[in-house]
Amino acid sequence: MTAKIIDGRKISEFYRAEYKLRVDRLIELGLRPGLAVIIVGDDAASQVYVRNKAKACESIGMHSEVHALSAATTQSELLVWVDKLNLNPDIHGILVQLPLPMHIDDRAIIEAIHPAKDVDGFHYANMGALVIDESPFPPCTPYGVMKMLEYEGVGIEGKYAVVVGRSNIVGKPQAMLLLKAGATVTVCHSKTKNLAGFTRDADILVAAVGRANMITGSMVKPGAVVIDVGINRLPDGKLTGDVDFASVSEVASLITPVPGGVGPMTITMLLGNTLRAAERLAGLVETASETLFA
Image (tube, helix red, strand yellow):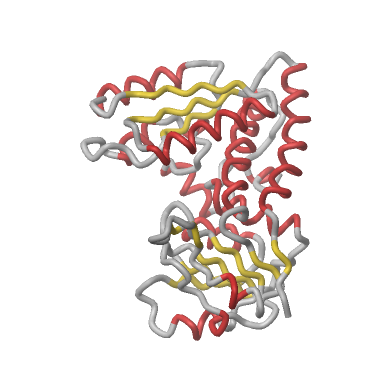
């Protein structure tokens, strides 16, 4: 068996085309969805991510703002910036690029973002809403995984899913979204004993632990769907995921590559969450739960 590759770039383009139509509809109503990104310091990788997010917004007609602040910016000064954007009617989504400098408390900044503009989905209010299936803004990476599975026609209800990784950004929300879709879910992590005993039973396996090539072919059930969320840079500079692509692709039925798999979907879901925030403001969305997978 040779796995079919799930093309994140292709799927991303599909959803962006849909989002553009929805953006055009809002513009006709006099409302242009707007995303503001704050970046503090000069981390090279973060700068690339921010530029990509701005370009993605503009590609579907959304308004985009990037506020680049000095690494010397204090927490109080950053909170003032967040508050200004909370009050700005032209901004529907606010994203503070992580990581922040060590002298700034990430959680304090995230909690300062109004929940209705928290398009990353990390505010306590939105994380709590996710647990009871009512979050309007699922965290972008796990949300992107769900949309990929949907696009590929992967049935989730009744399946056994294993998530390797327990982070607040991917692992935990991924488990919640799979539960909502009807899967039976086990969350494993780097301290799990006999990890392969769990992964070999998984119909759907999501690897998000941040350890290069941790999941090998011998750890995967024949015919499983394998989603690799990990991004690791090897000593030679190449990027690789948490999954040993060569061996696992000989066992799985579907697999995401790194790069070109989940990555493009993360930014696309950020666009989708910002668009939904604007639609909620326009009264086009009645409840959060009705549009979780819209």
